[in-house]
Length: 225
Image (cartoon, rainbow, N blue to C red; front, side, top):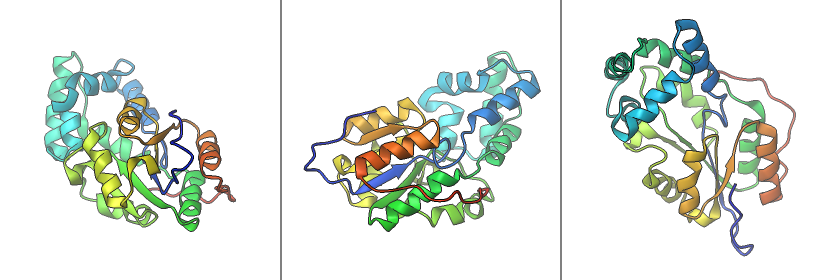
């Protein structure tokens, strides 16, 4: 976690990742898929890392491949690595696992009530039902940035700059929450204060400490998105 900016700087915006922060992490669904299909543990993560910025996963998240083209390319990459998988089934498992974390949604609402600007910044991909699935969640934010719609993805520095422009804030006036350290590093590099998220409660407590705003409320029902 980075240190907060100089005390004279007032935080004006909070930027949330979705999967693993506002929504449940997709990692358990990926692990379950690997177990149930006989893949080695962390095989999917290995393919993502080895593919790099030009691999199927990165291209899917930048909107350069649709889900069908991604499936074919990712399956080919898996075969080259010694295993077989079904790309469409994997994406479906991830989508079905994205359940709203009620305490985080409450925090988002409390932040907006306190007059702070709130954004979502997520690596995501196009699906036929994507808009309907996220419509109610997008309504909770002042700014909703999905990687495939803007042709860039975390951890590319320009996507952090984009969300700050859309919020009309300087990076030093923003706090960014993500569950992956690799996505936090470029945010810190341009001046944001960052919070690495595991469980929701410690992350919310850190936000409260930085902002001196109460973000707790009674737990709301979880909703699928």
